Amino acid sequence: MSNSEPEKSVPFNKRLASLRRFLPHIAVIASALAIGLFLRLDPVNRVQALDLPEITESNVSVSEVEAEDELVLPDFSTEDDILFVQDDATIIRKVDPQTNIPARARTSPVEYEVLPGDSLYGIAEKHGLNAETILWSNVAVLADDPHNLTPGQELLIPPVDGVLYLVQEQDGISGVAKGLNVDVSTLIDYEGNDIDKEEPDLIPGTYVMAVGGTRDLKIPGPVLQETNQTTSTGQKIFRAFWSSAGSGACAGEGSYRGPIGNTSFVWPANNRSISGYNYSAVHQGLDIAAGLGDPIYTSDSGVVVFSGWSHWGYGNMVVVDHGNGFQSLYSHLSQINVGCGQGVSQGGVIGLAGSTGNSSGPHLHYEILFNGIRQNPWSYLQ
Image 1 (cartoon, one colour):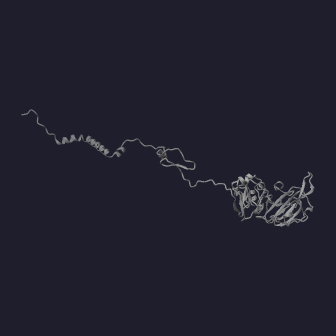
Image 2 (tube, rainbow, N blue to C red):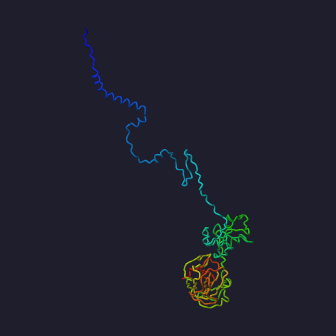
Image 3 (cartoon, helix red, strand yellow):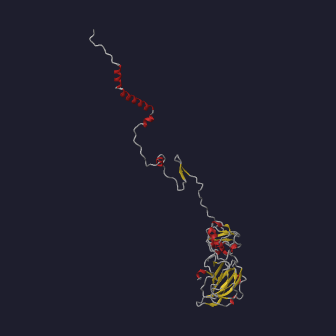
């Protein structure tokens, strides 16, 4: 007989109750093992499962962020983007099909067809020239009178201001230079003239450009004759005779006597505005605005010494001699109301405005002359 007590069996229900006490711990351990295994298999989710700090908004723009990845090089581009940098940092010149190549200044004349509504000053302005240059260079067409400008005419437009001259037979380079008021070297040195510097000569029938040159305009005028009359200052008075102006010239005009003016000239038309050419070196009178048939008045008292048609392009014309060296001229009239030798008073109607002769529309061409020389009317009109 043994001294140890026999082993006692534990009832099943007691073992189950004891196991239940450990179930929460087992569940925790199983969950931890499952999570560890899952994270080991999916590293992306593992990162997402980390407890990261909260992301906040940034003031840095997308373009600034992108710029950090770009290659930063010195700015080689010009204002017109002529240069640019390739991705491999190679600097090349950008092709610009719109590049403006400076035009070389012309040295030869060009032809210009006169259009309706053109004026001498308008044509000159179109080409960046003075009106005198156009008139001086087209004497064969305009005959030194801007009123001769007509649509359809072909004018030669010089490249620069001065005189474009057609060389004539027997012309020498010294004579041409003197006549156009320039030095011989001016003609030789101008590239467009193509003159041999070693043996300078001019070829008849060709044009030469006198840069900066001038010449006297051949404006038709009255024939002057000195009279015995003198003023209190001893100044000589020249009588202007108009027989060269046309059929309206008065016979024996030098012997006419009548009212004498007071040298105070009133406006010869109701309008006091210019309609056409103003007074200038190329137009030595005023084109005063006047409608067809408007009355034209004598500016000062005197005697009519021309009344009729002028073949200078002035059309119907009246000239009044004021007996003191002054004469006044009124042209392009549609009607003449006075005759040769007739005395007229200041402000009297001498005719009606028109567009006869070389005229582009109704107006009054008005001139004041002293001793036969055309004056600036603006210096006398009241």
